[in-house]
Length: 180
Image (cartoon, rainbow, N blue to C red):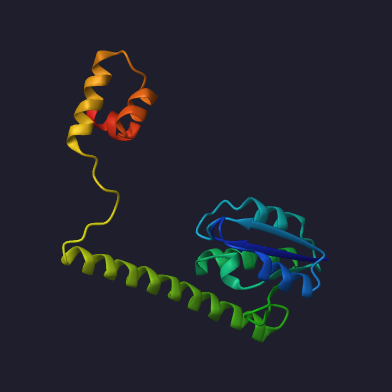
């Protein structure tokens, strides 16, 4: 049996391109989800792996759809190898049934992790440069006057937290943090 797996990181992204490629690759069943690759618990990936049997093929559009770290990718590959399942990555031209395919798989998984680390490094450098220019990230601070108004309402014990949040615009977490 040929089983496919498609994943995008956010609900706003489309799976269509991956699904088309998996269908063209002859997948009889395709599992799909919209969840970050950094998440360890991916229900549809686990379901796909659970139904795989010896002699089956597990097809992904690209290796980074399967895992974001070399360690996770190798763990999945090892699990598939123990089950006697071939791993095929369409875009990466990887087929683990051959020695060259296995070697290329391991090299590409290292490069995928390197790319992710470089993106993280560039992001952190950009944030540091912005901070050096006086820009601060994160949510804007709630005005102290609003917080004080919310606290007064809270201490009267006449309003629920939801009513205070609606009336002042102060979030419940900010309110609780200031109460304590």
